[in-house]
Each structure stands twice: as structure tokens, then as C-alpha cells.
Image 1: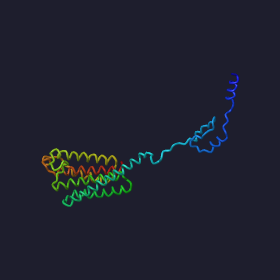
Image 2: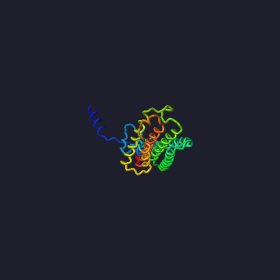
Image 3: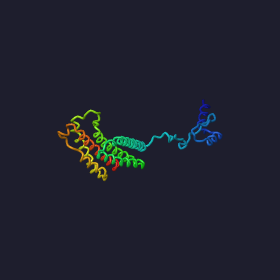
Image 4: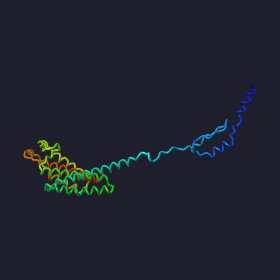
Length: 246
């Protein structure tokens, strides 16, 4: 028993010797966390914390920045709005050759100039301005379309050739005045200096009319002028937004 106790004490107090070959193998191996085979009865010390390699995420799978997503959506939206305004211009070209409405012609001319400005803004990278100006052009094409189709005898009601009801004649000037009031408020609040927007508001004021017994009896041109006034005021609001930038 005494001999066993002495042997145990010697085993604990004797320092553990690592063979020189093992030390050389550890110093020559790169820090890749790959364990080096050790001699029986020996062990390798753990690598220092700085030698533990960190796993890196490839840049190709990194999530895109929120700004990049927002910009790409704005570019797509501006392209869609410009494409729609071009389609509206093409449609108006097919109608304008059959009528001679002076008010509609003025709207078409203004819309064409605004659409050209929208395309220039898109080429210059001002996508929000391009989108708003394209919407303004579409609104003016809608105003001209309403006036021209009235002269051609088309019904201006969205539901088709059905004759508009009396309620539409009463509501049309109210909707136009509401849109004009909003456009004037934005023009004043944001201190807009867009001359075209101011001119469109004035034209809308001159076109809108009150509902009377004569006007509600089925005069489609009365309804068309009030709806065209609403479109003109809407175009002015888009121009104000394009100038302020939001």
C-alpha cells in the first residue's frame, strides 16, 4: 500500500513532457483549427483566441440596403408613369384629328411639354420628379380626352355608353371645387413657384360651373367641363409635388 501511495504522489508531482516532434508539428501547421495527431499520453494546448478563424458571409448573399430597394422601386414607378403618359398621348393623337376643341388642344399641348420634362428628369436621375410630372401629363390628357369625346358624342361616364344620371351633374362641380381648393392650399403652403401649376388652377376655376336646372337636364358638355376642371387641378397638384420633391 505504501508503494502505491508513493507512486501516485510521484505521478502527480512529475511535470508532463511534450515530445519535441509534437511541438514542431504544431508550430508548422496553419491556424485552421485542425487537430494535430499527438503521441500517446500527450496532448496539444488549445490555440490562442486570436487564431480561431471567423466565418465570413459572401458579399453576394448579403441583404441589399433599404436605400437601394427604395431607389429601384422609384425608378420602376417613374418608368411606368412615363409609359402610361405616352399611351395617353397616343390615344389623344387618334382623337384630336377628328375634333377641334380649343380647350382640349391647349391641354394636349401643355401635357406634351410636361411629358418631355418628365423624360428629361428621368434621364437625369430625378425619378420622383419624373413620376409626378408624368402623372400631371396623364391628368391633362384625361381632361382633353373628356372634352374631345364629348364633342364626338361619347358618354363620359366610366360605366360605358349609359347616359350619366342627374346625380353626376350635381356632384361634378363639387368634386372639381374640392380638388381646386386642395391645389390652391398646396400652392400656398409649399410656396410653389411653378407657373404652369398656377395657370392650370386658374383655368380650372374658369371651367367649373354650378349645378342648375338646365345643366342637370342632360347637358353632357357641362359634365365634361367640370370633370376636365378636376383633372386640371389634379395635374397642378402633381406639378407642385414634383417641385417640392416629396
